[in-house]
Length: 472
Image 1 (tube, rainbow, N blue to C red):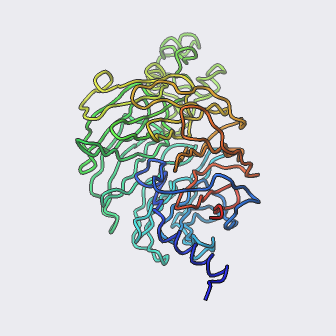
Image 2 (cartoon, rainbow, N blue to C red):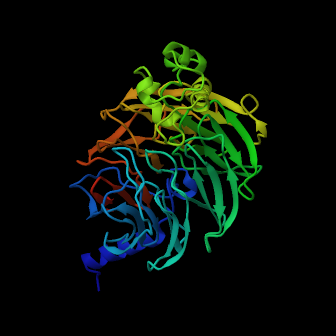
Image 3 (tube, rainbow, N blue to C red):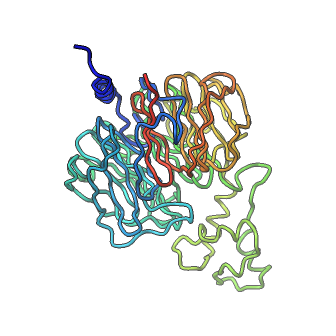
């Protein structure tokens, strides 16, 4: 008997989901943004090759997928939630509220549900800056919770938890009390905690770098990029002179680590400088023991960052806070860095393979794939470099999608997916020339990074979660 078309479709769906690799955390397997065995679609859109479309509450977290289960975090206006969905149909199977008593402040375009959950196939781990970490099993039963102090930053929390080698890692950088920690994912027990008092606010998710000599936990932060031993949290090396605020996560190409950072005031031709505190007080005719309010400062880029100087958020700037920010502006640098493995201590000169200071991304993490690293700069300027030596293959090439970019780049099967905040998604060929394979208008803003699983692309817009797949 010949199978019916419906049976064929069901068998295809079941086979695809069974054979698919997982996308277990932010930027997928190993946090690289790549799905090396996936074959996601090239042609899709709100009305084309939609496997399913489900309305979801607001949030900027990306989907993580394990088998036929998909997880998101969300904010419904009253509750912070972890959502479990059926990956094959988009059906919401359960929702679990986070045990938060208050919701942290966020930037006007941000969300208190920005960190992406992580899963190991048994539990799903969600982090909310408003509460801390909470783990559920796949049926929605809470397994453990770990309350954490809400980060001291008025923009909200963004860094996602990272799962690797039987540990759950979390970076919590804020204007006060920054730290890095590793937990037992079965119990939530703290395995180690490393304080990072020299770091201020940052929003980047760490990444595990496995190369020929060892495994390292790479953590971008303000002014410094650092490596830690994932077994005990011991610092291995430091690269200094990165941007004041870290927003993007590093990319990995085998034996090369590629990290991009950009922020206002870190470019040589537009550097923000601050006069010494004593000079400022003299200009303002203030005594030496004065603390300053925002109204005391002349309008400009320094006054615009008053809240970043005000570490304890008391509305006053002390001498120490002013000089701390002045030092950060002086030491900050914006660049795409390529670092070789095996470093120890200060590696600024010993392990820097190359760097580029042009056309830098702000939030969107770069993608390393097939010997190339791809970046997107706000305004829609795409660049590509050879990872071995930094040779520009194309640079500052404008794609038809102006505006900002918050979703990280992802790629599979020779294709690169770049999504703008306005909801314009470009599919590029992973090649030495800029080749646009498709331009898709999703009709909604997008902040979340797509997930690539088998032949399906999962994508969260402002109001929906889509699953796209081309017919095979």
